[in-house]
Image 1 (tube, one colour):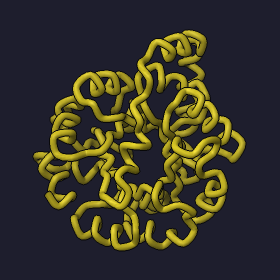
Image 2 (cartoon, rainbow, N blue to C red):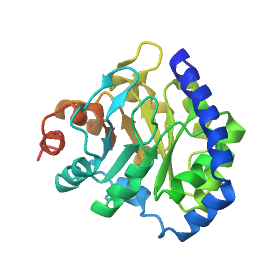
Image 3 (cartoon, rainbow, N blue to C red):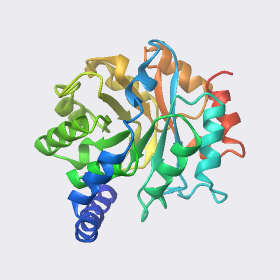
Image 4 (cartoon, helix red, strand yellow):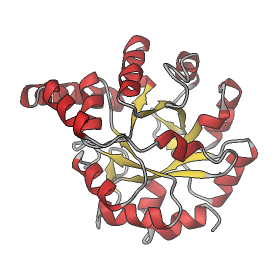
Length: 267
């Protein structure tokens, strides 16, 4: 784990402890039970097979880039993504490092019909229930933040709540650790993500996905994340059989994120 990631995880555990004192998990479970059934994030991203599907990200800032989008309106951005072909949305909910908010998920879902992933540093079952109570249809689980047993517990809980999980790895070692659990506990609830960001150098390169492809058991559920900026990047991945991508910072830096998405998709 990089120093930056370790710091974020430490902060997140403190935030979760405070949240548990403020709102008991039993209350969150009641709220989650009152939510409509999750939208099918897995189907939105994987179907139809062999066609490009983009998870477009709603993201104001990051630790490496600082503020990415000054004129940040999550609902307007989500609408623009939907109008220009996004298959699903990723929403940053971490407040301290990404200037996100859990409240954005409900606001976005009221405005567009796409399924929404809660993108955060999930290290505790409390956050999974919290995500469902907030209306999230899917969650991100970062392998480098979790041991094997905690990862499996979170996967089971997410499946019980009918949510899709995007299990993200950054390196070869993490991929080897999680690949035997792809599709656990039930197929149709889990995606595998390869993040192209080097956590130590904070650089990105889509070649990273291509370098790890031989170790991926099922490319149909593989999502390439980060560093995707051009139509050529999309085509390189497609030629290797990778048709699902998550794009955030590149789109957020454009004056019209919807037009930028359309250009990436070749529209």
